[in-house]
Length: 318
Image 1 (tube, one colour):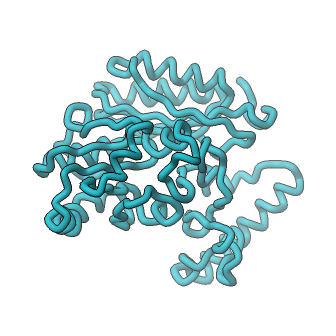
Image 2 (cartoon, rainbow, N blue to C red; image 1 turned 30 degrees about the horizontal axis):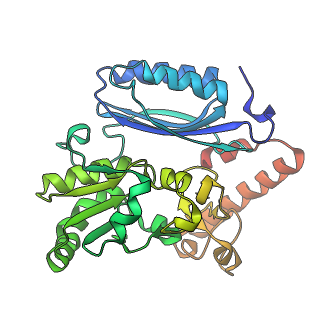
Image 3 (cartoon, rainbow, N blue to C red; image 1 turned 120 degrees about the vertical axis):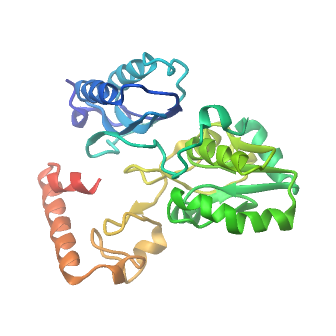
């Protein structure tokens, strides 16, 4: 087994993947993927459900390739698409391969994104679509994601979780469509998975001419030149990189370890920010006992860093 901590900077490969395809034996797939990931020193999260697979993993290239080969051997997953990035530090603290009812939770069990999703739009064609004033552009991500970056003209539902999106659309979204009467709807998310489900949802609600960004924001940032880009800000990612920009270069955001929300330089400069404990967003939602526990955890992390070791308690935070 390759020890990921012994890798040289730039040798850790990050792979973001998902696919909607039926899985009959989720327990067998979970066990097999966990074994292959461990053998290749791969960390991260993979979600397995009867509707498909979703996750982001990182490790040495050989380990990542072994996992992807195993996934593509599953019936229905031969055409799995993957978005890659390289990083000098392992962005995950542990490995999780979990069985879920949905690979992205929306609470709409009758949807079939594999057959009902909207029209894919390549990154190179996305600008023309969303610049058209007759297009309603909707960000399907959560509020904290939209705060640090979005496309021009995008509507922010400001939902706390993806499960809230159907209720938002049936109320505020419907009212917006009635007011604007768009010729088409264009939706986007980080990697594409939430859009496949949300476009399927809109179509089930009777909305026609629904489009979504193929490969999500990550592919757009990878393939569209900054000078031509309509993206503003950074893109939140669910690992220790926290955010990325054009070319998938790591951004300057960090995580508040109290609420796991992204922090920019201004947020870290706030008098309410305490490293490892809280930020202005969560300081009033934690009691004294929690703050003391977080502070002790941070102290142990700093001591471990000085010793050049990994603090095991940090694994529970990742």
